Image 1 (cartoon, helix red, strand yellow):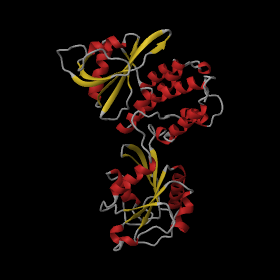
Image 2: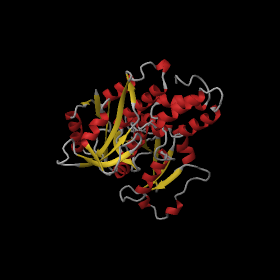
Image 3: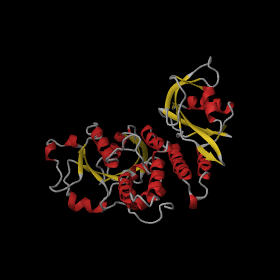
Image 4: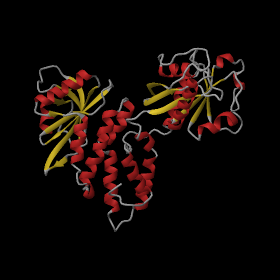
Length: 396
């Protein structure tokens, strides 16, 4: 049996990835694809060429295919391939229809994951091949939910087995009693764990919360950041009473932004009080806080603000700088390590700088292409057990 599935998410993107595996998957690929280069395609190779779907005289599409490592299913070798085509639905669906006509069974990403995990059904006695299958299967699920090209590229590296290869090689070395390399492997695991927050957000957007006093321009600022009118803006304190959300992508990273009610101690009514409480709950769950202030108004950051944020990563945004004649006077109090960005949401001043500051705060270090990255909490816990040199390395 040959199975195929569209692994990338449903949103339009630059590239779509289709996986196919089975006992005769190579034969199907060779019937539908003409490589631009000479020679057979070996395991680990990536080739550019034309996808004709079985009719070399018909309409062709430029694609890239890659030959992955084989799987063993019920003592039968299953060949594994990936096809990378244009990210639009038409191109991907055309290839899926061709594969179906050539004998492959089209399944959704959830079924693909289930089939992959079934290869490692005996968790208590995972072989090297089963370990590889399990880690790749988890990466497949993450890839299917990625919404940006940048996050999909990182997930795709894991689908290709970068993280799984580290796991298998680590287990092989750790189980060799004649060569104790546990300290070296623990150090490698600790280095990989630096990217755990990134890996856990490949399929889940970061939560960025805009908070601050009323009437400082939070709603205008979120509109400027996402590039369209998401929040209602009125020059009156307390206008935003509930949490308003907007999905966006900044520097390739998916983000869910929350525009919250203005926080002040003297709320004017029960509805505003409820909005303030909702805002404070959002702060507790935030990955990053944008604390927005009116640059033309006095502020005692250390006394009035810092204690409310409970050590959360924060960018201090001094908005409405168009109302300030001496911008050099807008400085943080001496000794504060909080990053400050000057903006005017209505005039678009400082918005690009704020976007870059958000990106740097969420992903302070970008991994090199092909780096192993954990993409689930289970994978993170396994790495922690290796880095701490504790517990069973087979059962995270």
